[in-house]
Image (cartoon, rainbow, N blue to C red; front, side, top):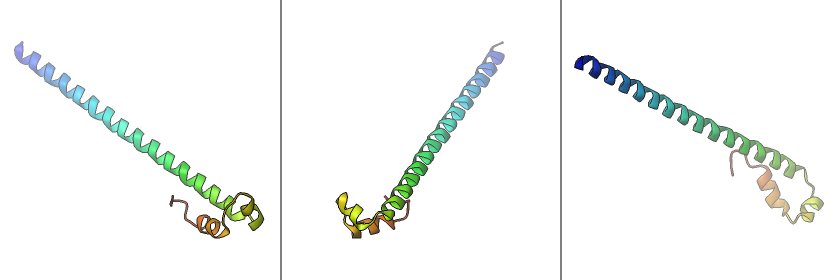
Length: 82
């Protein structure tokens, strides 16, 4: 009876360890996906903002107090650069 009890306990312990590893793995995947979608959203926002900035003429840039040279530099940056 003692052997069965130990075997059952060991099996339950292994199942518990597997469940913990699976939960940790799922949590890691979830965290990765959240960071991925946050990054993709940031990239999209930058691309849209830079395209909008590129469309502004000198008068519009002056109205908002932006130097045209800076605006051109910013507008031509790739979306992944902050």
